[in-house]
Image (cartoon, rainbow, N blue to C red; front, side, top):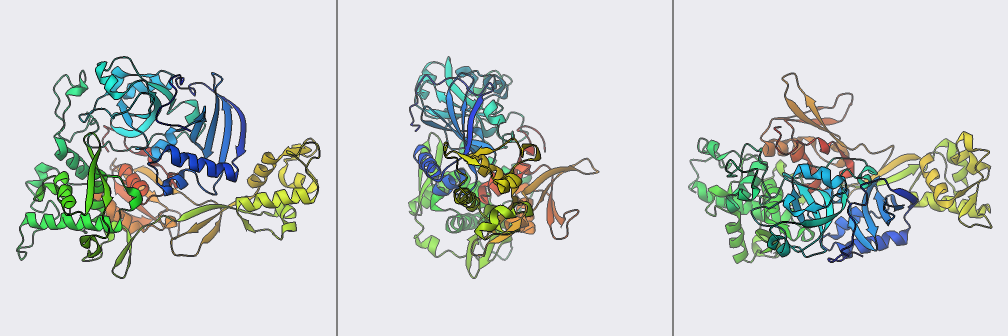
Length: 598
């Protein structure tokens, strides 16, 4: 399997042209376990839960063997209709679909949108096309696997192998070939999936800023497009300011006019100064985030993620966190103070980017922390004085026996309407074939079709032409003829089984009479989410009005409407904080493109 140093003869995008499929089979249990072990070994930054999400235990997973247009033999692993991994010469690589769910899986380099067209056409990435961020390029060695993203969006659009180390890139003056590209968004491997567009993932504060943004502290002269390296950021304050802006903070010009900025809503009876109140709020949000939201599997955790995805969510209703109005002024200074108290340990894992690498959850300040009053803004379930974070339900695909298939399943004690797992269906079909002596004596891979199998799985035109089928084809046809069903299990509750397919969380954009856009989200209840609580969170983070109304054409389903295109905020909430699988959310591709107004 893949190691940091890959063969240097790796060809450019082998999927730039159409490939030829040799076989497509359901994965065996032993191969599934081996793949999971390989993923764990190759990508050690993935936690156990993330590996289980990427390589699910029971959901359908197929192995597709194909020949690329250059003749390379490639094995592709497909889950939920999308290619998630591919294997070439015993090296395992993620696809862009996987990197969109785990954007920090590989070191990421940035280029311009116009370069993408060249990469999709099969070109390698040349060093003059790189955008150098203020913090410098990621540190890699020759042969390292890297991701390539576009300015303004961290969602990778390609993967490639570094043709030289970072030191060599800089020594060369950023000239020559930088990366051998293996796979890109819009190539034929991507087209074999659902063809979704890259999600909009906000750049880290130290990434190159989007030149078209109206706000921010980017300083550039009139020749900015000719020399991107002259862009500067206002250091760490810019990092924290951008995170706060994404979470709905007011601008500094507004802050000077509004004494309540920072969420303090000053109380004349409170003897503490505004700065002391903000210090108290900052520490409360920090301790609450560590006690109830951050888990060991999340470490190492970017300090900007701790602030943007965890601490802001722990801010009490009606208040807003503003580090600049505290005595610490900067996030790094506050975290340094918390490190001196031995609550956390912070390290600079990559140049200019700090991460929390350890938390002492037994520290008295964490164990003794209690929430002064309940708050709906963190989407939690209150149990006594304890707060339990939201956990997504476990969703399992099942199959229901229709009337047309009862003869095949009745021997095993099942009847019309029986609910079965995919593994049970396979066992029943295999046992039926063996019991009725249908396995071909000359070729054990083929199954003879008796009248019952013919009636159950063959189309009308095949009744007199198809006499035998391979095991894989037989089993897949059986699954396709069964009716869909699913099981939903919420933590601490009994499983709920329903017929049909679970409706995904549906996100749409609508145009109102005033020509203003609104974001509409439906089906939150199916995943255990309270629409009113979600609306409250989005109202605070987006600084936009929200309403909760009955969904048209339904009796008991509510929909949340948020003013403007807020799909980016909604996507972060559902994917990063609530950790719902992307396959159960539709409409994320409609997020505003970098630089566009909402």
